[in-house]
Image 1 (cartoon, rainbow, N blue to C red):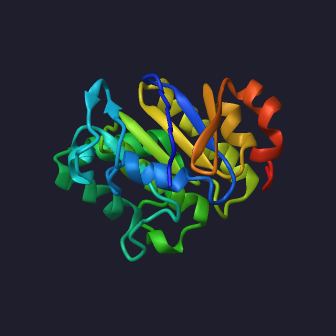
Image 2: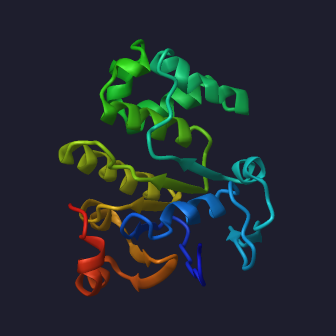
Length: 216
């Protein structure tokens, strides 16, 4: 259950949303993305009130979620996974240009079945597919899950680049250090509440015992 959550993320900024298991992070993602209805409060995207909007309506106005677990189609090639986004009206050429500019490795793997790639490469593919929808707000749920630290660093460097193009990004993480490194703001959840917000350095200093309870 969420209680009195109050967050604001400026356009083109990266916010790290941190906290231990059971803190309410995943519930908040479901409320923001329209998968779970809020019983009270308000939700605005780009100044528009969207609390009662459905998940597909939110997607059409620029909200995109990459859930934990990556969600690629394992029996399709990298290129086929990407071109599925053309059904949303995006040109195949633009989809591939966007994906391969952010993730050159996907160009090398474009004819490979997605399910045979490493976990890090599958996460790159999931992110590339999301970017093809030209999102205004990107929710990344546990981007680092199951990945080696060097791969996580690489992915978060790309997160920073994506934000610099004007996309607002919320990174939901149990493990904090790498997310904080590329974030403009941080918030910590515990017991369904936001218990701290601010710049990454000050949040780390005051809430290290909570946000580093797991690991990196």
